[in-house]
Image (cartoon, rainbow, N blue to C red):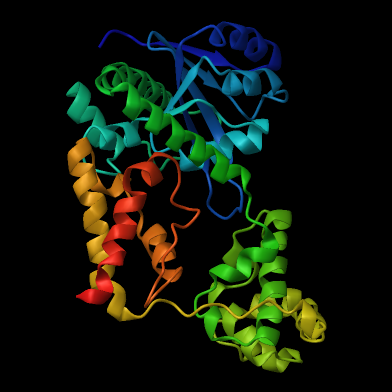
Length: 377
């Protein structure tokens, strides 16, 4: 490979000027390097941009005005190329307030072409470009300055190869598959904007279905407080209040610090720092009028549904085979469970909202037909 053209962007004016150029391109390969050791939000250490010929490294520690870059991210005629972009999207949303669209994820593209699902970047580069990438810098400190020569080269080559992979993969996708892929990209971006409502965080607590309505009212307040404090303090949720304490706190509702300290997995630091707040919160939530309590949660599906889930998954696998793509792209287990919950055990079943777009068109009826024959077996 010839020497890579690497250019640094370290001030707002240079970024704004370069964004004018980027907005005219057909595609951009994008990547980020960040740290997330003991923070709630990822801390950006580097933003890489490539057009297939040159690579630009933006130093997010020096940029104050991201508005021109946000315009590039939103420019509808510039395809934004990523690989496994979940956390990158979070970084961009935090830095710029915007999300990339249209979004082309090479990990998804590979699966649409029948390669393994969730393929790692190094393996994809080896498969498509025949290059064996070094793994030296993936765990290094991206917030240190200056960055080492090795870090700079690693970051620049990453986004250069991403552009090369895109150029080879994109033409192999049929028009229909490209449409599906971009729809999945839009979903990935939409999921980022639905920053989970703290008032609904309790729905994700394991065993919450075993609690009564008054206990759920307490659980809801505890989870909402934990979520808000994690964001406010920029600390991981478990640092604010450990996951395993939520259920017993809602169930036993301690009224003093001694009882609070006895809760399973309760960190002494939490008792010291937030004990009074938690006790007051529990007392307040417990006194809410009955009409404000959440509804009880449905029990999880019984083990007996396993063969049924398998049959539904087979519908997706057959369709995937027909389309020449990785079966995991078809229907997620959560979607199949949501479908079963609409009518188990005796039906009738309804397609859940989470089964949408092209997947609903291709398989919705086949999934319902598969369930319709069950009771007569």
